[in-house]
Picture 1 (tube, protein in one colour):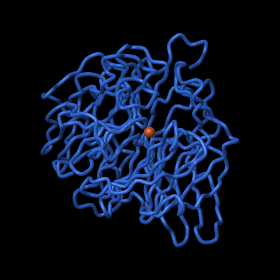
Picture 2: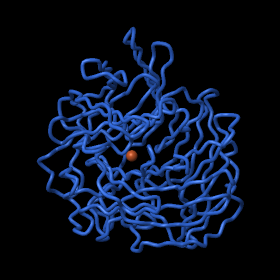
Picture 3: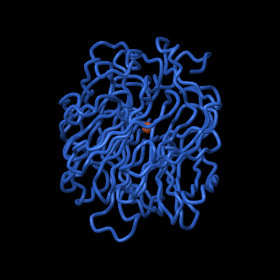
Length: 440
Ligand SMILES: [Fe+2]
């Protein structure tokens, strides 16, 4: 937070929390919703009940959802994830990492018929498709500690792979869940200290851990905010392990120190692993005065020769990367990212679609002060190309202080959206979400 600012950005404008849980079954639409979209779009974010929070990342998780059936938006609902802490409003206790001290505020996914709300310091919380909370979800008691908010689901095998980090040893643990939802493998991975590892990556045959220099400072655990420090002396490395491997199989590649919140994708190319992700240097905390700009980079790591290279692909301030679900871990042509205001608050000004084949991009910048959220790609039912599908996001309009669920044609991103589902309230700028089709 800027010391001179009276109100941090996450308590102002469309970052500020909303007060009410709302249900609306009479949603107006501009344009037309593709009838092949049947399912729900859910998006999570911190919505501090106390209307005060020491950090954008802290605060009770609230999920905003829209159900779509046969070309009709049948409902909008926003609901708190009812974790045990939610009545207590003791925000810093979230950092102790115990399930009873959790907010489940970062992501919401579907896998093996379950809807799971995620935050990286505890196991998931299961939801119903109407966003009621079922309770803590531990894969039949097999997941005893934390789960990242960014698991990866293999489009070939249907497996879900993820890791959890610990503030106390073990500092990193890998988990693999079968397509049917059974946790079938857990492996402790050796790293030397407690790091804030936010995301990881898969390829067709490997998983990739990121041991980056964002280190927990537990001496500050009881102070406001998230006590992590950017400490370059920790170094930075990618650890590549066969999906069914263990700690002894991890090949570590040291790279120039940086932080990576989110990865776009990774894939195998001969003996090489190719990674695309926005890279930050010197990030210290949410709301810092001159935040570093995340810029899209590419790393190539050769498993046979150990050669490695890194290059910057663009100089825009971009994050919240995504590729089609069908390309996760496989070579992608297109990656979609949000452009963030580089001036301080992480306001999303537009979307960019990177074409890795032609080294070009197409863009859609919001007009008239409208701001977006994370873009989610949904493939068309009988897609004929990788970008044959839709890009979906909540968009806030300051003119009426309300939000819309906006659907773009992903192959014509520069054009106006094909559908705008008007919501009765605003959806605060939040974190991550998923389109979860009925058959998932
Ligand atoms: Fe994230």
